[in-house]
Amino acid sequence: MQHNCNRQHGRSVIFSKMTPVTRQEVLGLYRKIFRIAKKWQSASGQIEETIKEKEYIKNEAKMLFRKNKNVTDPKLIKQCIEECEARIEIGLHYNIPYPRPIHLPPMGLAHKQGRTLRHQEKLRKISKPIYLKSHDEVS
Image (cartoon, rainbow, N blue to C red; front, side):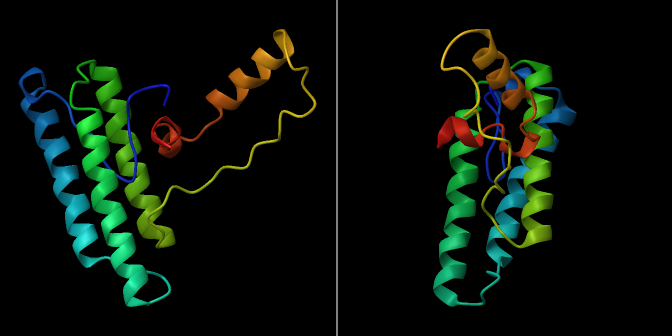
């Protein structure tokens, strides 16, 4: 992330510094997340699991929108919106509200210091999918 962008689903910015179109897009995503949470059914079909996942979706959205409420850079706002949309689509497709893990090769072969380690850390950072950018910042 690491940019200040988002989690299960959302983004927020100072509305006075946003274009009306961007403001509507952000508010629309926020509302969409809460509509999804309201209708959410867990993959297991268990009531307890469904309630837990609904709460996760709402809490994650609130936390991330609040976290990013001061983002004013148009590029960062766009990245946050893209991440939010990606997390929504992945969550709906796989019926899992939590971020999907990525599988990158471990850094076990890199030296514990020096250029090789920094290079490998840089490669891992840039290869991280957009839908996980904010997740590590909050975890």
